[in-house]
Length: 408
Image 1: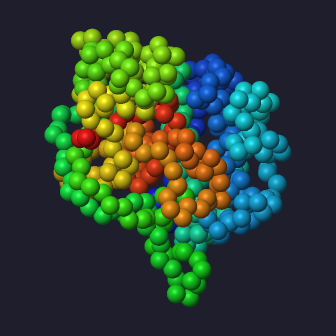
Image 2 (image 1 turned 45 degrees about the horizontal axis):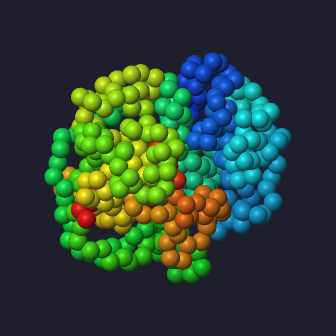
Image 3 (image 1 turned 90 degrees about the vertical axis):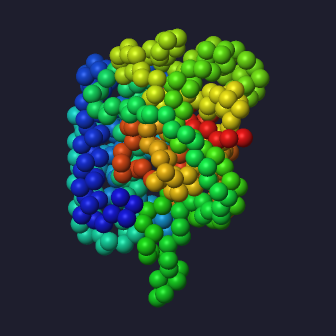
């Protein structure tokens, strides 16, 4: 989808919207009708706000953006056309509407919000029909598509956090154990490749690159020593040994921040787990279930992943090691895509980073978040890419996240 032309993008945008609406219908059913009242929590948004924000984002960067065909060269400070929904900027602009205030906003009702999404999508599709198949011109259509897919996964995460089953998620795979993989020392281009320049227009990058998130810019050479990495994510069976060995009570396995986090939450197992003796019993999307021990461990924070590695005498992979393995190990059994995977890497800009027009996508989170790689079972196939850098603060355990390890 990063290189999709207009026809395929049109179908994908409609598909993403259908997924969004199916999730909102599930939220209505589970949360008590159109108000969809949810508790104020740092890790979720009110579903009604989430729905309106998806439509606003698309309208803001496409329908209202007079510089949309300039793509990443667009000046985000250029005045925009008015929204078709008066007051939309004051409700849905995530850069200026603090998270903690979203529960107090006097939002349009569900019916009006859905109508807003109908009109904004119609405008988007009409404009797309007139747009050339050019990376710059299609940039914001691709961005809006990936943005909506990410919000669909956020609604899936909300269903787990609030303990209801939407009936919209695939089953999580159960894996057979595999031996770790050894990769020789190499020199690797970390990040996405810079597109070629047109000879007649040396200023503008347009050819052969497709869509690239700003935090992937640009590919740069990194020396990678030989490393051994797990062929797949750490399983419940492996993590259970850490729990049984009293890992949550041993200060020596935890970083300072991790130990403070464990003590504050009085955590003794991963989130949603009821017990881990003779099997894993946990709540998953509103149901108490016994989980196969060979499924990947999930809903662990970076602190827990790091502590397990210290206990096991291993370490989390650097993101460059993960990227090398995902590419070079594809035919050797390196499996990814079941859970997002914590890495050892702090989320930082690549050399020469410049924020794209959506300034708040990456830049505000550098230095405070950790990088996750891969995808989860709830991630849209359109978003899955071995170059994609996900990022969350290390205490987050509501995400569909696990980890794998490397030899020390």
